[in-house]
Image (cartoon, rainbow, N blue to C red; front, side):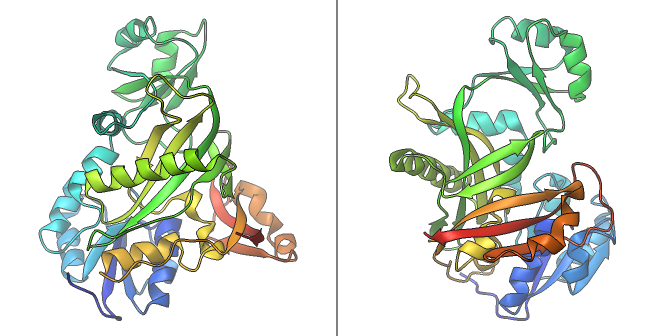
Length: 362
């Protein structure tokens, strides 16, 4: 197993806040970062030693980028597979193209999970308003129509209720292929983040509870207020997914916690997964010795993983849109750590930063 020494260069595909925080964690360990993204105003650019400004379909730029770094990771799972394949001809990429091929498609995600015994909501794949109409005869309302590809923070998603027109829902979803999911009557939503090193060693952060507003994550509470056996079931399911997918780096898995066990005795159903740092893991930056971002750097560089056990309970609050303007008051509170992303334009629904509030000993 190759271990990259300090001063090696980590390539990051994507320039958002996840790339920014990964680069900051890398700098702590003595690494430099080279970010590839099409916009020089992206948050990661400010904190990386090098930047390639190019589109993800620019083969020449991708090849030059790949030759300039010692390993490559990403901060956005929807980087085109063709770009990953080009980069992968020259340098190791984590997560791999095979992992991304599944993570980029909600149908493949759910079929993969079911294939290894992990439950999901009932679903149907639809390619037209007519197929959606037929699927609605089988899946009880209310239901959720999502695009099978892309879409996040509520984008490309429509809640379908009784009396809603299928054609209208299809237009609102706005993608060529959709996945119609049955509504899950859940007690709460939780997520688990697993780190996997090059040697196959894993380190799993505890399950946390996620609260959303307008389909956007608003708060993460660590630990999740659920029974220990349910938390263990979620953690084991996330670890199984990471192992079977062959992840090196991070895998974040979102789950629904059921009010009662289903027919198979399961208390959690997988909702979605992401092979990258995750918004619900930002609390680890201040409540753990090693954050999710440092774990990613350690994993892809061949270093030993850190202990994921938290030292403090915590609540992470996203600063969305004008919430960022509260930053002077937030800094006045003890046990509070503010993280702003350096975005120059504040828009409604845009994640501008987050704040971690420590809540006492774990």
